[in-house]
Image (cartoon, rainbow, N blue to C red; front, side):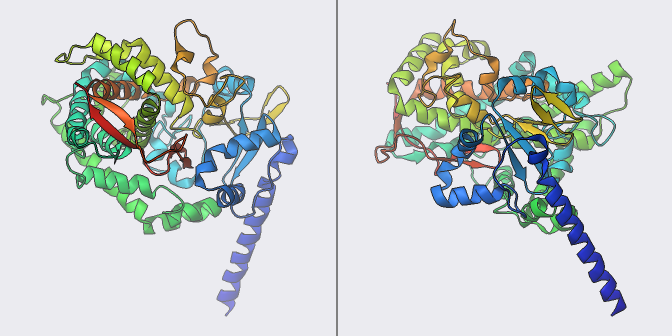
Length: 511
């Protein structure tokens, strides 16, 4: 009985301690004078988000931040339960200081959840901090990863991506011939998983032909489970982060992740043992080569195997749903605006004869394609709530005081949809980006801002533009005739803006 009494007293003391810390956490807004809605005790601002969704539906989720700005002004706080206090801002001077001018004080990304702070995500460029877990932080890791995404390296990986694009065009032929309404988003997801599997995981993934492909099914299960609605460990980790390490191994998400990591580890081990074998260029090979050069250049030991694995794994998270979502939105926009699609098609057929093979340089430099690419990412940016940094020390910017440990977020969609920067912001208008038109670089930020912006930006641009060139030169994209909605229903899922019910279109063969 005495032991039970002691354990009960310890449990009560722990809960009282957690309650007090939670209460202190929620006082930050008052201390620094930044407004916010009253947070729920257990879920923080998720209480308001849940109520908003119940009232308006999931398709209004993208407008939650906009309405908070309308209510509170240029800055407001969101509480990620007990884990994080996040200042959301659309003040460009604050953003310029946080992400560029005073970057050294805001190097770290947000500590959004203990799941993402551990291996493998914690050692990837997506999440690693200034120092990192093994004496090298984001800067050292980026010095190895970034060279894999130079123009020269992109050209080396171009054939791998192009082959998958041509496979997609082949798969779509039957749908175009039959004129059936289908979900093109699903096809793009298979495409991007194939590309990632072949360039970052060393697999011969063929999801476009086989939806039972091992890499496809495992990756889809993993990404689908990275949600508090699917993972009990993630849900509990938001409320009681200190408990998370003890329960994560009982969650299916952990075991799916472990399987993907083991597959990567086998590939990496084989590559090291057979380094001299000729093969197609991919991210694993490029990172291993760059690390060898770093060892010689800086007289440092080899980067840990887990770190290489982490960054290949991070590429799955960063490159799968983001690029496929961007392609899906762009296809929908082109279907809704046939005059834009026609102009784009004319540019493509002028650049490439019917039998010409598409090349990297020409595809990347098509001017009208570039305006479509930029306007699509402005109007429908796939990643909207990941552009954030955490203060490493107390910082004051104008009249905004940012305490150490508090993060600052620039919600991408709120900046892209701000009529101060983009008149008639919900209109699809590629001419916004024609030659000579000026805009502040901080008002177009689909890949982030500053030194830690997306390292794979060129890769994503290449994949997206190449796919559009091959798609538009072969097929005309038409809207689903049964859908009369003026906009595509979308929601926020983790950090993504994504369609609620896929993207239904019809393809028509071009003569």
